[in-house]
Length: 78
Image (cartoon, rainbow, N blue to C red; front, side, top):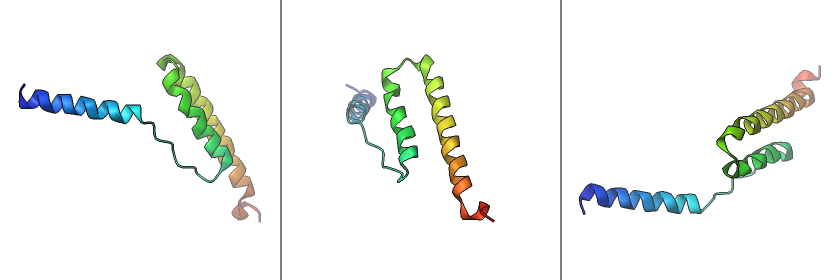
């Protein structure tokens, strides 16, 4: 086997190990944001054609969270 083939085989094994061990994301400290992040965990089980809708829902949810944070901000309470 050539050096390149050995490297490619090693890289493929490394990639397989990384994919086999999912990493749990750290929490943000905000339950609403953590819920949005959790909603993205199921993407691997969905067809790629459905990913856009999931991202759009997540984006809208995060916009709502930020809007609520701005309303509660002391800077806006003058």
